[in-house]
Length: 337
Image (tube, rainbow, N blue to C red; front, side, top):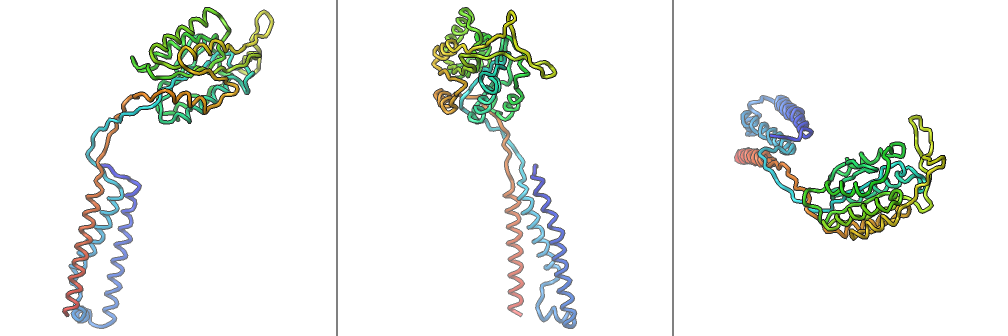
């Protein structure tokens, strides 16, 4: 049997309550003694015998104790209940390459991306969200989960100084992202690709669009968010002491720019929408996500315990009825006398 321990502290009320009964009884005996012979006074008042008075006090204290136990919500006996849930399954693909430290989008591309991710986690409560970080390779930041509070704790530490991945392999992360969904259950799912798109390269871009088309055949939608500007920005690199240098090529600082055509093609190929990350309207992004029909998510099994408080409450009620009945018998005797 399980109880709510906090409520059991109320059982301590029985001690002072019993003391009150005892003091009242002592006070009554003193009052009778002051009036004269206790035996004569008792016979004149047709008082209830001492044994019955003790029974009534025991009934009242027991009833109070049982009510307190009922308040502790005792449970025993259990069974399993399967909860079937449906909702959106959204996988975020967040570019974690060094170019995301650029500050053409304030305060930096990665910081602005993190704000979007955190805002969407708040808006997607009750659904399942997962996230992959990627550069030239990808890794799971957190798998598909309904525990979005835990997901937030894994997103919040992301910052420009922690970016160490090189390159931006969009084709690889789309392919890897497909493996993050339940096997054979890609249809109706959604990805959000947040990236600057990397350097424009016909071969790499073509492979990324081809991967998107394959994903579309499985029923997947990819919304893309371009996190950079056409003017671009220099790529800062932070050392262990926090000193800043910049990525250079042949003595010239590299300027990383937005590869918007790639992101537009990926969105178009999958029936998604392209968004400008520097002026993103979160309401429009959420509306785009909600265009996908809810899908069946993993069933959850929970243990259901049977509450038994009513047994103790019912017994307390019976004891109080008996107490009232004895009291009425007492009144009847006094009236007859």
